[in-house]
Length: 268
Length: 310
Image (cartoon, chains in turn brown, blue):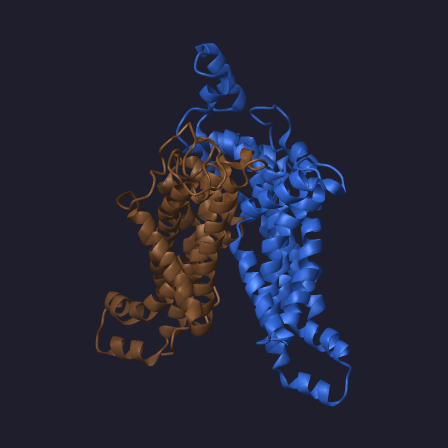
């Protein structure tokens, strides 16, 4: 086990801290992110409002911090669901092979051969807009890379001696699959989750930007940028700070992903 | 070679059948009555019925699908529910715009990405290499919709160097192309750096250096030739997805291309437009992939293309 460098720990700590603060935000002595104050509309950053206020007088600092909860939460949930679906599909496809494998892999190819954003947009339009829809859209596109990776790993694992040994002592297919093969793939799925988080975060924000994510007045980074777009010439802080928060978080996730990629030599 | 290309093009037919079937089923399973939303709630029953008949919604799903395929076989993608315009001619009109934007973005990202990637691989571990690494990771982390707005604010609204939005000549093209090229260049840098570093560690590079070849020649003929395949793959993938429309960039800069057209179609549930864009997009994507595969063969003759592969 190598020591973990500060370039992995610092970004990770930043994201975890941001997430915890945003979850417990209502309990902390900050301003209410949804409180409309018509006396202080479009104020530039000052002592009272460090990031300024938006066109309805809401404090942008409060909205940026509390928006982290949804943006990060949806990215992580989306990655988890993708991992579970992709894990199951890849496990079964790799182990049983044959027609099932062909069908699953054709679906994977079909999804991958399509611009993923458009697919996510299409799904978000079919279902009513909201954070659950965005999560589903992320998972519908995201499971494919997990399926591909896990399938590949299973294909190499299933020819190994310990699988033959397990079969020789009379283990059933289910037992081999769940107790002998699956545990070998769990760490791999977590590694891929870490690599994919940055991408999930950006896709979530893009869907929110297009108006398909969390609905007003709930603040997410993507929807704040979208809602304040029209004021950007006179009040650039309304768009600047949510964007910085979003980019910084994505950068932290990507730094984590880079480290994981290098250490476990996983190429998604 | 010819038989390989023909075989790949023939495979397009089942793919299109599958894609049209899946999208048809998905679109038909949407809640809500399209005829009702077209004419509004206060329309009389006769109007609704006539609209339903006009768009074929009075028949059952199987007949509708068969009808759509028949129309498709004639090379007709139908008419938009809202504008009544022919979908195919709309796509044909907007596609050149999307193509212009895609080429412009590639013209920035390809040279920039490859050169920076080479520099990072040659100066691995040094300050320049580390800086390029950090910059490319940052480029991947900044979402396009935000950088596009920021670019627009700085270069168009403040400095007034370029028009903020619209479709037209090269002055309109610069800003969206820059916004679009950032993530593409960042990906390309990372891929190029990794492959070039791998090639540089090969014994034949040491041999070439030892026998006194000039470094520039080693770079072009030994390194680039051996690193080109993954680089081309990434370029092909990006190009394919840009030709399908850069949804966000086209929307923000008001660029009249396929991406915005698709997005509007999806938002308004304009089924013929959505289906038309999906079909056109698939054809384009397959064509680009085919082109890349053929290019592989010319760039690296060790790769042979057989008609009976895959």
